[in-house]
Length: 421
Ligand SMILES: Cc1cc2nc3c(=O)[nH]c(=O)nc-3n(C[C@H](O)[C@H](O)[C@H](O)COP(=O)(O)OP(=O)(O)OC[C@H]3O[C@@H](n4cnc5c(N)ncnc54)[C@H](O)[C@@H]3O)c2cc1C
Image 1 (cartoon, rainbow, N blue to C red):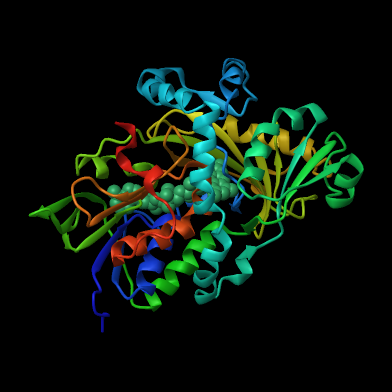
Image 2: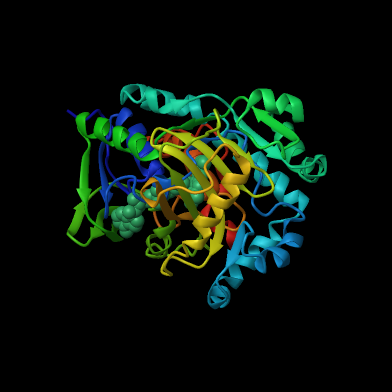
């Protein structure tokens, strides 16, 4: 029996964001269905580095980052790649990205993000515990490692911004680093440990268990592709899909990198792009860090997972349609072997797997979270970029606040869809 005030809510997209929203909405007593065109958790939420980093408040467009771009674009090993044929399409996004890279804008983005990402593990905990998925979430911290003291100094502004937002860090010299993580190459001479951070050792399994529990608790999983909405007198009547119209009096747009046309269907033009990323995994690795470790210069993360060692990272600007460039994943293997010298110099192909996924990214590194312009019944929850796993639990809570009619527990004004006008 639905609770008084309960609404019929359709959540579009069963990635980490949509699934957390569905779970929080269900806990508020709403009658919830997830609409997913593929298998739950097979989008960006499948192959990420699995980190729940409440400390990740700095935008990608940090002041000074643009000075690296020309060098990166001509270096095949660089953390950023652009398909030149895609440049005309992505140019307006890049211009906004450049404009977001001032110290003031970056500081404002960090202040806005911290309440969304900071409480990630606390907001995830009730969902994980209800789903019996505690074994998949670990709070061991996150280590950032540098090959020179100078490298760490170049990141000083980012560390200052994290500290200004309440992130506590511990810095280590080369010897301390060795004791903390003996598997690491001796080329690393500085480390920064953020103890508050956590990770999942299997992102796909985590989403899967949350969905299982959602369905066990009365939620529905509908296999369909949503493409629009029918409004009557400014209120939502149905969600339009390829299997017909689905009755709903509220809808959540959480289709990750594919959310742009759904917002456009309601007249909201958002500059959503995809920053494509890759992973490469080694099954039964000869060496593995104990805790997720980011090579701060190479901008990739090595995460110990239940299914092996995952190297994940890199940004490729090439849109949703272009085929993967698997060389970008292979680069991660070369870099990973340098990070962990205990790894074999070669591995049989059956122990290696690669993946490419689409981060849903706005140029200012903030998501779109809040009601659509056309109706308060459709709530946007997309564009979480590099920190979608981390922001999903709090995003879900805020979505439930909005649908239920409570004031959101954090300031969501910086995330509005019309901030780009
Ligand atoms: C290499 C890499 C490493 C990363 N590492 C981290 C990390 O360590 N920590 C972190 O916090 N974040 C990380 N991220 C980012 C994170 O993975 C994403 O931000 C997050 O997964 C986005 O979740 P989502 O639910 O919005 O999108 P998705 O997981 O992509 O889910 C969207 C879902 O919507 C479905 N869908 C799309 N269109 C429709 C439609 N019209 N109708 C119905 N269904 C539809 C899709 O099939 C998909 O299942 C990483 C990303 C990459 C690429």
